[in-house]
Amino acid sequence: MIKKFAPLIVLLVVCVLALLNPGLPSKISTETLNSGDIAWLLTSAAFVLLMTPGLAFFYGGMVNPKNVISTMMQSFVAMGIISILWVVVGFSMAFGDTIGGFVGDPRTFFMFNGVLEHDPWSLATSIPFVLFAFFQLKFAVITPALFTGSFSERIRFTSYIIFMVLFCLFIYAPIAHWTWHPEGFLFKMGVLDFAGGTVVHISAGCAALAGALYLGKRKDSNHPTAINVPYILLGTGLLWFGWFGFNAGSAVGATPLAASAFAATNVAAAAAGIAWLFVEAARGKKPSAMGFCIGAVVGLVAITPAAGFVTISQALFIGSIASMISAGAIVLLSKTSIVDDTLDVFPCHGVGGMTGMIMTGLFASTAVNVAVVEQGLLIDGTTALFFKHLIALGIVVAYSLIGSYILLFITDKISPLRVTAEEEDLGLDVTQHDEKFVIADLVKK
Image 1: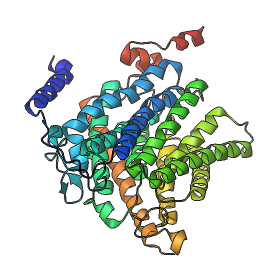
Image 2: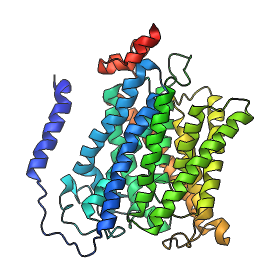
Image 3: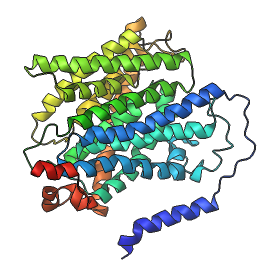
Image 4: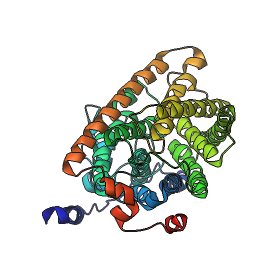
């Protein structure tokens, strides 16, 4: 009985804490605020949130019709769970007072206390602190939604929620602190991540690989390739659109740097989509809508860490190369007998993010962004930034992969992760949500 009502009890506790910590603002300083920057960041935050429904359609179009609702729900529920968790303690663990450069103090902004009256963030002085906090929330929301594609069609919904919460607190928040907090150890090392290649995509990609390894292969060996291509196209369009807020918004202002990141984002996605079609042609396949969409998303992933540090022509190169590398990674992973990454999350987001991080170490330029202290290897021949990125890459991959596997093990002990063979056969839409995707019934007929 207690187990049955546990989620409701947790929610009631959060509601009580909210009443006990109203977070009423005092007078807010507006001296450094800029209305144009505020307008752009409000818009960007909305763009980034739209990426999560976009991801839901992108993933939902690739799975078996009996698992469409469950797959899409895994993305949508992240908007609810992570939004609450971010206010309670997530934001504080990512951007609160540092504890040794490794994680934020959970007490700093617990229940968002002090956020409304706080001075602007030191690296975003022209926007209110609360806007910075909620812009960052959107990144935290989409990260766990990304890794759902690796173990979709076989994970229990309640167990996924538990793992998502643990991942946000113990994987995402610390890595965000390392990378984006001025006292984070990767930030102080000089590692560059403009919009989340490391924080979002590498962490999600490695969690995806851990999930695919831990849950094992799907019961049905006859996996469909693409079920609903229009869903995939719609999802790609929403992701591409939202990614302008993801990358250009990370300039935290309506500035020339935002325009440069905006342009680099579009060019990388376009080049990667076309490159994927060329890879398909080289393998003797016809150009597919699904292939172009996957390639475009890989290009968006790869340009994310570099968007504010590279030129537009370099963005074209990054998108093209990342697309070919990820396509090769999918082929190699498909030949293994132990990994069943349902929607190729690790090859696309994990490998794509790693490629982007390495490319940032090659091409980052002071001419594009004056915040670049050490330039890329191919800009002035110095190796410092490049090797720092390689070190950071190893640290983040190891932490995300091993940490996620441990959290999956803990989650499995709390609530079994994998559905039963019978539930998997019936489909997660019915067994987890008691709902049906109407097209699924039409397909059966």
